[in-house]
Image (cartoon, rainbow, N blue to C red; front, side, top):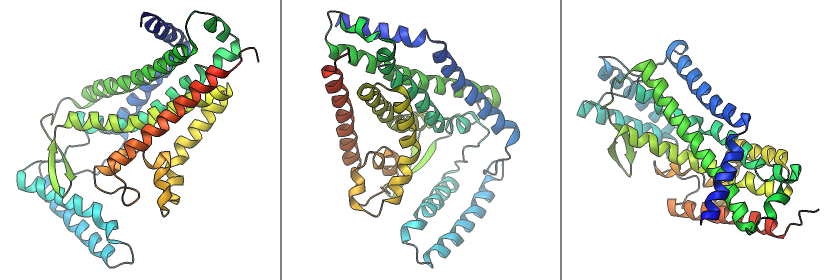
Amino acid sequence: MKNMIRLIQNENMKIYKKVGTWIMLGLIIIVVVIAGIVSKFLLHDQSIEGENWKQQLEIRNEQMQEEIAQLENTILTSNAAQPLREDVLLNEYRLENNIPPVESETLWGFMISAPDFTAFASMLAIVVGAGIVASEFTTGTIKLLLIRPVNRFKILLSKFIATLLFAFVLIITLFISSFIVGSLLYGFKGMDLPYLVYVNGEIVERHMLTQIVSLYGFNSIDLIMMVTFAFMISTVFRSSSLAIGLSLFLMFTGQQMVMLLSQYNWVKYILFANTNLMQYTRGTPLVEGMTMSFSVTILFVYFLLFTFISWLIFEKRDVTA
């Protein structure tokens, strides 16, 4: 156990002694600051705000009712209007219970949009995951690791854990920086407002912080899977550029490919059809019959497959080749 902890510490030292690592962390903060400035000073948001929010909600409900009627008269399926129906119910709940919408120009309003930047954090984590093994082969330092009285599995595991820890640091940096920037720009107005969500036919009130943390959790699933994939490609092919390129390509095109193939039932077994677990929070899975437990199982199988391939190749590879 002590050897494992030392190996992880050693890998963390390698990561954080690089200037590029600190540049990545700085980029996360810069992106959040720019987003805050743009949101505060450049965008003219049309969200429902102010003392007359009830009147605005009623007007918006009337508009959505008209859109629903139009959709129901077209050849589109009834599911096309379901999101609008849910929004109408949410607005009616707000009117009945005197719960104003969370204004965009508030701390919560800013922070609830920050989890969207986890895709950027994924890109940075992929770069680290793609190079943490491949760079050892490129520089020849892998031989120095393997001559230690530690088996290869522990060496590879320590690198993988260090990569996931770095990804976690990126997410924490994103969360903390969004809180600081949001509080500086907007103060602490509306901190007591709940987040309303439509679940299984009823409206549920959630604490705003709980909702934000859950968004980070859902978005981090794709991050973990893509970092694991990049780590596997790096281990198998000893090429960080290939691992980065292939991982980023799949990260940005995987969901689109799944959507194009959504008419086929077998698409539910593809990785990218299951990384978005938020599809179950509103009861509209990509393929009919998919469930949360099914997607979690598929993700677990892919995770085991990626890690097993990484271990198998690393265990059998001749480092003198």
